[in-house]
Length: 115
Image (cartoon, rainbow, N blue to C red; front, side):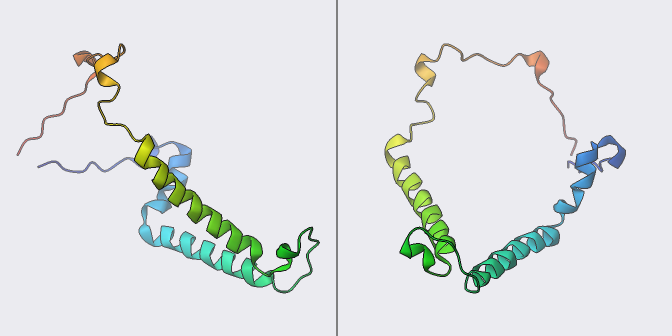
């Protein structure tokens, strides 16, 4: 059975050591909830100040937040639709591919696992 190696912290680059706190899912959740909170505060703040606008539609409080969300969702839906006619099989280029070749055995690192 393979055992997970404990990494030596001194072997990691400086940035890798600084970002190790992101390995804990609790910390990632804190970031996500912090972003939610920030977006909510900015949405609410939009109700309390006067903006210089060019179109009447921009005067609607929260317009840019709603517009951004709708456009992001539309982008995802359009991309999924485009996928139907743009997607190719995995072997689409393989029969005529002049660059395909086997990887040299010397460059492959093979590990054996003792059970």
